[in-house]
Each structure stands twice: as structure tokens, then as C-alpha cells.
Length: 315
Image (cartoon, rainbow, N blue to C red; front, side, top):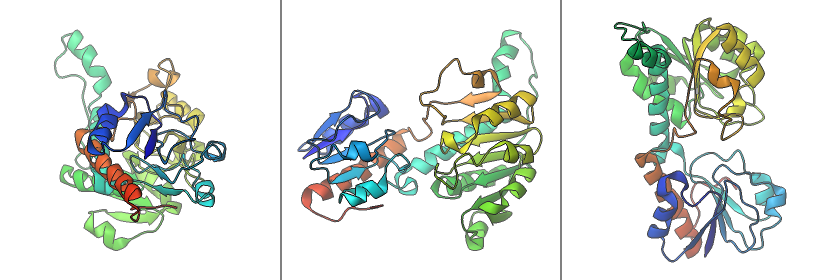
């Protein structure tokens, strides 16, 4: 069996070699970039962050499975795959440790923004003590936009900080809100209510037709003046021009971004002149989550090889 990985050989902290070590009888081929050019001759594809659209699927001659090494399937044309009889599966973030790792980085960003991390090197260089003055998280309100695996992992970890937690999701589940100590939980139509109350807004949504640019000029104007925005989902959740204007005016005091409109982002982007803590899409790149993703991917590849039912199917 032959598997194409849409990533460079050394991507993802050595995951490709871990796959080879776990399933030595399967041939894994890494592409030259984060995109697949042809699926001819492959039984399975691990797409990573590459697009899997109809033209690419048209090059497949024996592909049976598209297996994401993580949860995100926004780049996969699931309907086109299904029409060709190609199975599509992922590794849910809650079961792999990915959600836990992403939540940890999100909290690190919150603390960094609250404590004015960008100003600390200058204070040290100028031998200033007691500067900069930071914000405490206790008593502040955090708005969780999306309460899937990542949102739940955030709520679990934020509760001990003494923060007031509110959230929105597609369907409001009040029993879940109580379990995760949310002050209130609404549907996505109540996003304006969340934005007006939150000192920190954390996005952990997929980018689809319902959520694309959900943070736009209107929603940014509804955010509490001086609040912070953290995006752990996808770059397309935020409308960039309006976001830059909100940062420039100070209406949004700062942002934590692990995802971008273009990846990798341009280091010269004006975005980085603002109060932004940025990481290169590494929220889920830890020893814990990588190990969980490898285990999930290998289990489904083994099942494909042995003719067993594929887990966590989307098609």
C-alpha cells in the first residue's frame, strides 16, 4: 500500500518517520511542498494543510482514503471524494490530545497579551523594574466562540483562573454549559451579546460557509473597547482589512494568532506592526498531540490495509 503525505519530509516534527516506524510495510511518500500535485498510484492521502479539490481528485486512479492527520477537513472537497467512492476521515481533536495542546497555547496567548509581553524585552533592555503594568485574568470575561473539543478544553483550563466564561455554538446545550462552568451559552445568533461582554474573545471554529469572516467590521465594532481577540481556528474566520483597522485604532487592544489568511504569512505584513502575538500554526504541534495524531492515522491506515471499517468517517 502506498500513501502520499502532502508535506515536506521534515514537516510536523518527525511525524512522517513515526508513521514509517509504526507501519513499516506501508510506503509513505512525502511531497515536495504542502500540496499534492498528483494522486496517481496512491492508495491513501494525508492532506495536511493542502487543498484536495475536484481537479486533484481527478488524478486519482486507485485512491481509497483521504486521512487527515488532525481534525481539520476544510480543504477537502468531501462531496467530490464521496462521488468517487473515496473515504474521508480525520482524527478528532478531543481524542488525540490536539485540543488540549491548542487550548494551552491559547491560554499562553491570553496571558502574554494581558501582561504586555511585547513590551517586556524593552523594559529589560532599559533596566526598568515594575514595568509594564499587566492585567490580571481573574474577574475578566472570556467569550468562547465555538465549543467543540478545543472550546471545551479551554473552558476546563480557564475555570481555575477565576474568569467568567460565556460561549456560543451552533446549538446551545445548557447541560454542557453547566458541566463546563459557563455563565451562559447561546447560539451563534447571540455572538453580538458575547462580543459586547468579553475582555478576551477566543475563536476555535472551522472556516466554512457559515463561519467565514464571522469577525468582520460589524462584529469588530461590537467588541468591548480594549478587548483582545485570539484565533485558534482558521485565518478565514476574520476579515483582514477590518481587523487591521480595529488594531490600528486601538478598539481591539491586541490579538493572538496561530492561523493566518495566507500560510505561511509574510513576515513583512503590516499585521506584525501591531500588538500581535503570533505563532506559525503550531498550537497543535506538541509531543502529546503528534503522538495522538500518529496513532489515529496509523489505526485507519491499518484498517484500510486489512479491509476493516474506517473510523471517524466524514464520507
